[in-house]
Length: 563
View 1 (spheres, rainbow, N blue to C red):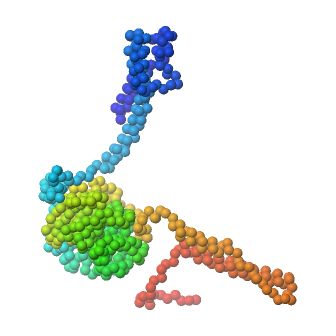
View 2 (view 1 turned 135 degrees about the vertical axis):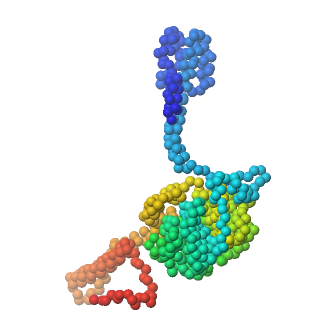
View 3 (view 1 turned 90 degrees about the vertical axis):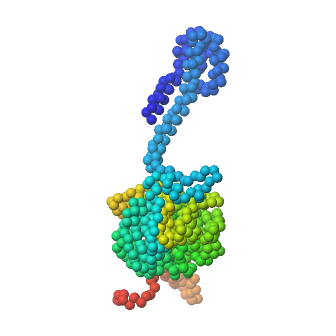
């Protein structure tokens, strides 16, 4: 910035135009004054053609010594007024643009990179061995295979992408740092394990075992046994709501608040076995796939599904939603793969695969990983355009049981019957992370601070809706209904009294009887109106709690004695 300012000052000194008095001193003859340019209250012409024509006509009238000098000085004067504003604008633009550019360079130092093939080649032919040999040493260590004998394995990554959790069907559970290969804890629960999930940080994780769901700490010690979550098949953790969502083999969908240990909602879907589950990261709505080819979306605030879509003619095998919450991918037994737009609920793309895809997952940059038996295929740009071939293809060798992309890394974790493997997928992860959102390099003090902050900013489960923008709007219909109920008895006049007295009654007595009856009617009307108004106010301030169903344990409750 200092050099550009000095340059502009020098340019200003050079482009200073001579005044009219100096030109008059050079040309003393009054006959030539009309040939001089008039500067008073007029802007100089910026067109160069007029300047050239004036120079040709006036050159024979001026002395030879002064003609060249005059034309050069007038040219500088005319250019100075035209370029002065441009220089100021450019200086302001540079001044205001340097700060945000410097900030953005500091905050976003990394860029996304993908594989590019030459002419007549395809990126699907590039193997993991070739990718590993061409990258740096640090990235090459991220591609590894673990041969284990307690599979098939379910896998899960921590939100910041640092830790990894694996659970074998035969009871093997392990948590470790997959970058440094440092083991955190390892145990055998001595019963079948169906799914594993990290909770809010690396200190706690949940394991869906044969009968119940257990919560362990980072040392492998059992902290809780949740018997309400029985026969669980799939689990999803909602980080902003501190909710652990589970599905079981009897078709029950449950939400458990792990911060206070309260069961928020337990809904029976009446749609059979629920072994296909995923969450929408944008609005925390759960999506379940069913045996009749439908996909239903659930929130803890409704007993029935908020959306129910017929996606396939055969049973749904897997469902996945991208990070933006706009696109949903579904696969079926009939070897079809469909991509849906969740804003219009229309099918964008439909593909016919070699076999039915058992697992689907989206990366942070929109890549879709598909497992076909013992083969993993990764597709690029499958949501926005028709793809003819996969971006990366890898042969695992065993039947695949789980797929997960690692956050903020170009790594895909694959769980199979003989262990797990880590694949390198260039361009899969977000290259720049937000340390306030998920920090892979956080310390213990930062972890505790982030835990307290997330608990203070916890979102209540009542705010989970299909469209999160509805929370900022006013429910106009409900407000109008409440207002009509309030004003129903406030401004209504009491009914008129039709009195039919006896024939021999006097007129004075008629008037008094009619007045007394009218006062009684007014009192009754005012009492009814005040009671209705109080009930409406109480309902708006403190809504009624739902009455609990009678149970066998009611006999142990203390009975209130009537006075």
